[in-house]
Amino acid sequence: MKKTVLSIYHGEKGKQRSPITFHFPEPGPGGSVHIGKLSDAGKGWQTRSLSAAGIGRLFCYRQYRVTQSVTFITEPSEPAICLRIHVGKGAAFGYQGEKTHLQLDFMDNRIFWQGDRITENRLMEDEHTLVELYFRPECLSHLADRNTVMDIIDQSLTERNGPIDQYVFSSSGELDSFLWSMLEEIDTKSTSVERFHYLCDCLLLMCLGEKVEVEPRPDKEEEGLSEKDRAGDRRYEPSPPEQEILSELEGADRNGLLEELGTLLTETDRLKQTVRRERELDSEVKGIAETVRRLPFEKLGTQYMKAAYLLAGWYKSKEITAKNRKLLKQAIVSSCESAFGLRLPAMEEMDFYVEWSGRPYVSGPMGADMMTDLLSLFLPPDAPKLTPMDGTPRSGNLLLEQIREAFGFKSMSEIKGETANDRPKEVVELYQRLMDHFCDTLDFGKEGEIRRSDIVRELDSAYQENDLLTLLQIEAENLAGDPDYIGGQDDNRLRWLIVALRSDRGNYREMLREMEESPAYHDLQSFHRLGGDMEKFRRQLKRNLKKLVPVSDEFSSLLADITAYPSAGKAMILAECILASRMQE
Image (cartoon, rainbow, N blue to C red; front, side, top):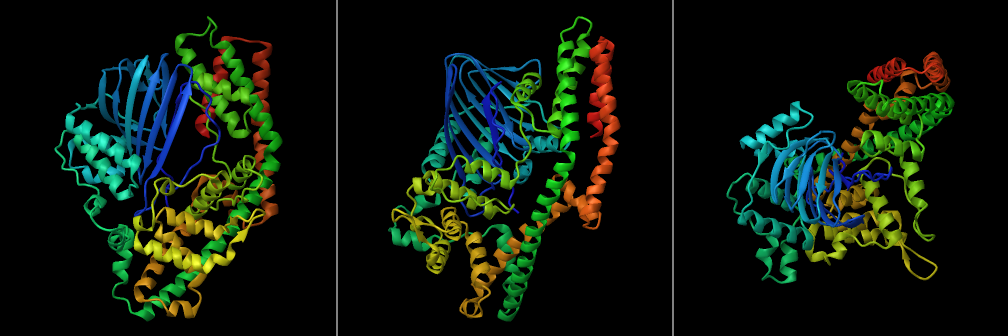
């Protein structure tokens, strides 16, 4: 199952972050990197950026024009290693929450294990350029024979983050020249995932002081060829897992291939139906649990917020020592987080949390139905109906294609003017074959425009991304059950269909494993442990809530006592109770 793309949040410190976040799947091997371009502005600053995301790697380039000092924060979506190159006069950089930050030279280059820490970057009046390259630690394992890389990977295994100032490197003419060439290639060309990973490795090694002979883009060697010749030579490159399966199937005879294909079709369809039923059941049990818990959770959540406001009033009291102020601040933030875990916060409560925590409030993952309902509010009247995501990469890609169609956005490959000659031959041929098969699903709108079906949207999305595996999965689902169709396919095509179906089967197995183990499916897991009996599930919810009542009443009494007879000692007792209860969650 594909991971979500490595990403970062970058924004002005203190600015309220949107509670809506999107988690998109990574590009697949053989596909193109995800490109993003953005311009933003605030009081005293403007910025424009270019980002490129591959598999476990994220490249970010930003230009700032600052007329009034400003602090930006950066938070990775998951623990990551950061390579950072900054050019500009007057800047300070460090982890959020630390008292002192590094004062940066005009040119500052460093690499460090950031983990999941938020960094702060204070920029003074000037024009600044910033390049950041993020890696998942495992994506550098092939370079672990370098001492610096090995040290940082070791830190990632044992420490939440590493020191920012441990590995600093110098700039050079070769590094600067390569960096600008890399930027131009990413910005103006269709960059494959493999090429992007290679460029990232080259940049890292140059920063470590190594001499690197950078290989030219493969298409540079083809510039003298005709379009027809170039298209004939462009083939799909299997990823290592795909190649492993193909090699395994190389010796299988046709009967063996047909037998495995039939088994996979049956098993994949069974897993798909099981996942669908489990998701529907999860939605049902969550609805029941929410109804039973709503009032008690609302009450306790309100008490936690009351406690947070009460402690905030004591924070500046002369009766509170500096050491105890630190404890109070932790309890205020913890009390807010406990309240938000019980019920949705009000806008002023989110502002209060940002003020005391120093970081934006980020809501929990939004359910697929809720997210599509929310997005639908912003769509034009004639937009296609959004299909809720079902947890598979394909459903996420379909939703993106529906949003793109609704607002008239072009894909990156369309913006760059890519044609069939720029794509692997296997992708073009299969796409055309499937489009011929599904052309009767197209319809016409009121003004004569062509309206696509969801299956055609999926085909178009896979074609734009050079996603051969998705095209094969669509082929297998819709055509592989026809004996006449399968009889007309050669053994190589059968092997590729098996590769696609094994991948599909793996996705569904991973989804079921997540439903069995992830805390996000706690209610569904409890329901199954009770033998799938809905009445038993309701009774257990009510029994658990009865255990919560004395805790809630005791907390209410403690708050009432402190309010009626306030003292610094009681405030500290309340803070310690909040922190202790948080540790037990």
